[in-house]
Image (cartoon, rainbow, N blue to C red):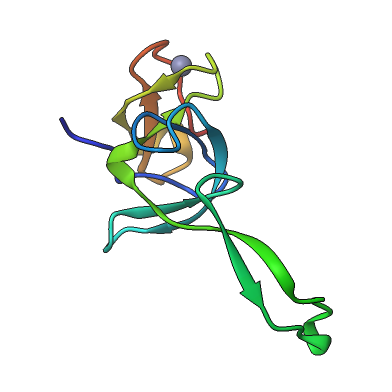
Length: 115
Ligand SMILES: [Zn+2]
């Protein structure tokens, strides 16, 4: 199975396997080289942080996301709200003012994910 390496900050991701299975969150950070994603509110670990007055952080027990492998997540389509896989479509220059553009297409509902 191939997984999408074409993820963008702000994408909603659904966890399809592992201990966090079934959770949905927003992509905070994507590490393409490591094939890992940081998903907001998912895979939380408690960290003991020192107080940092300059950043106005009180310290103590802080919940922090740990990265997940991208094979454990699927993109949630903003159009049909279902976890899905994407294919790509190249929009020819004529349609987009001279600039060729690659957009993601939901395999489920066939809608364009990227405007
Ligand atoms: Zn869809």
